[in-house]
Length: 414
Image 1: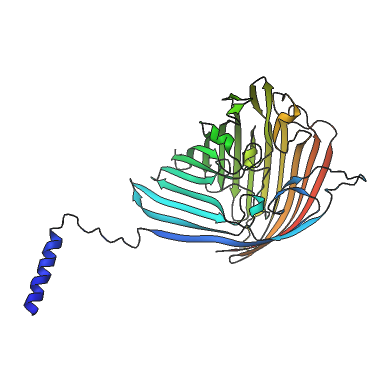
Image 2: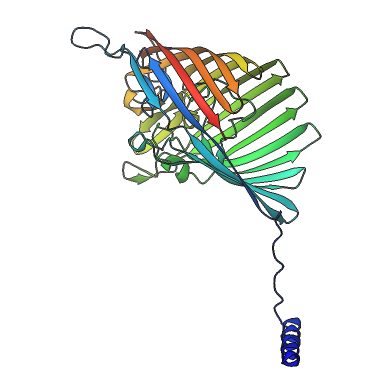
């Protein structure tokens, strides 16, 4: 009986040895890895005035203009408060076997902020991208930060707005090529399509989809021991309409922007600063949009210009870290007047009233212990409103309004 079993085993071994499709080697434990990360966050917010906001006042942009009731009282000069946890976040970082000599990695991240007000608390996609890294050259494909948002240089404020209105914000589906020029200097080239915010401040992306040319961004970065510097330029061409007055149109809205930023950090202090100037930067959750000129069956577009700057100075303390932020932004209008006030669109712009400028000053203290942080913050935001002229700029009949926000943010990171 034993002899028969030995003959059978020998036959099976012989059959496997001459198989035309050899068995694939079992993957090793190091071929793939997944690491989870995220945080649980709860905020308490009080505002002294109604503001342009998102998600039940979680994100405040600028205080609303004066709105007189029948008795002449300002209906927007009322206090509001809320508790929210919708910014809680989770994500996964994935690594896998090399492909064509490149180290492979990817990130998938979401939160519960939703994409529209009505769906608050629903899952929202933030990041979903793949990176191929050849040491000196890397290629990123998928949805991640706009190239004008710099992860190494953004305000450290406690407010979830991360300096929004003064600092570009949002995600875009893109292809990014980054090349190391030396040990400290790199060049990146990015082509992307707007993802989160459209030219007219809605969630529709028709204008960028209509355009066959993606937005193009180029920037240089220097990374030293304590210093991080960068500068870049961006060109954008979107097409608001494909048909106008029942006639096919190919008219585009073209704009450029330039930006620069810097960071200094050591064991005691972190200093960050950023400045940007450009047209039609509405998609970055900043002031701006466009004016339109109508002539017969033709409509042309001109971007309104926005300038913004911020600085953030904070302690690098391990357990207690105070910080201060100041930001300012200016609506400079368009070079060409609209054919009517109805042909003006954008964030902070309307056919009747528009923002001239906004500034914000805030102070915070981060109390940190292990992976838990409590951050009380005081924030003052002031906006100057005026009657809209045909250039999409405030001019006359000015009102300056201010919102005072008090908040406490509690974050537990994992």
